[in-house]
Image: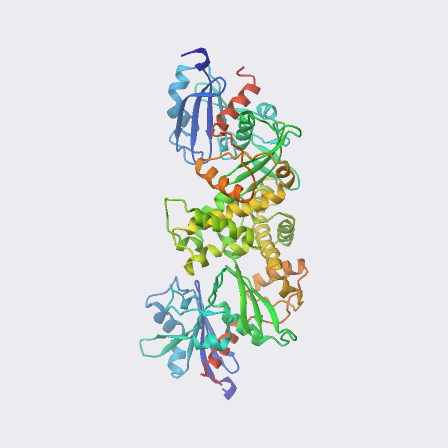
Length: 316
Length: 316
């Protein structure tokens, strides 16, 4: 193992539904990777420290002095240790200063990254996405020039649209797109006609985008995911992707109003998320004439955790 | 019992969650009223005919020649007998011509009212609301003059906004407001901070209305029902009414776009629904500067069933 490959950090992405772990060497390169379905709501016996020991015990033993850092819902009231939010504008150095430490049984510490709070008349919160934003900013090969201002989107259960200025998170909003899709599909009348399909139906997805743009808004367009099925204009297997297109379309339509200034700067939009969501958002953003950044942000979380640890002075 | 009080019709409002029955004398006056929680998804033993026998067996026995009529989801694919929709423009005489008959074990018939289908590029359906609309039209003391065109709103699980021209249903749209509220409260993260409260919180409801008007749309405003709680701007007991105001506010905001022509006519809007929903919509419509019709539409269903039966030639 060369010096460059020598592990310098154990980095954890610990969310509601899963735990991902990386053994990172400089500069943020993953030497080893692990994951388990042990989100903060689904912990194994032994709780947080037990989960960490089970997944990464060998790393901790082999490298007894390596710092451990974690971001995500692990720092929420339902997590391992509630870490107070850092306010906007939030830089990674401020987030590093807000790290709090949970202790392992052997006395070793796990540093937990604080979320970010926008504390104005329209409060908003994130936990975990701040780390991805800082990581994506580091990964930009071509950071925005003159104004240094860009918008990033992190699609998911709760999509985040984040304004970043010279690496600072200055403003953000949350669209409950993923959760709305899930609860409507599972628990509302709309799910009744839907048939599960493995294949992505481009036509149905695009019809959803069109309907979102044509309609007056979400309230009066949702029911079309039922009536188009009843009227046999869409098959049961198409209705899920239609609803997906409808909701993502509405999200982008509203984002165009909320972030008009950022979008007018015409810097291509980094989209940070799973491959499947990135695919859907690429189509939908393109449909709206918004150009998407071509960079690879799949390592944004690791890069962000590395960057925060560096700002905390643990690695150089 | 005077001749005017002599029963002429057994009228049933048979929906998803309940069955209501009236013994009606001319002109649509209720001589007796019954109800049971036997919606089409919650039938007692004996199914549809058993439910009817249990609730109204004495009426049927005492008046063996009285016609029986039913509207609502009882005519859907999941109901007693699937009754094909009548297309728009739909008049009560056309709906009467579309009645289909389900047979009771003794050979007696129950006439089931068809729903209405708007079969264009943006299909829409109703089952039960057509009867309320026809009834409300009959109850109008001051039907709209020159154009004969008015808008009616039927708030509920699936709110219907209906354009009525000289008693014909010409156009309508559906907002899934009530169901959206229920699934978000029960199954999404938004419900977590909510505390059940018996009292209506006017302040919280109005803040929801304000947010709906200020925001870009539903997608980016829903999360405020969580963050205002996290930031302690609203108490847990207020969050439900805040979300209610937010959703109803968005519904009306979109309706103002969808039915701009109807609303410009400035005929006061009949609101047909439960007292609780009417109260909420009165506040929200007033907040939007839309005047509400002062008539009493609480008997709209009975009046509609009576009117359809009269058009079918059963009563004079």
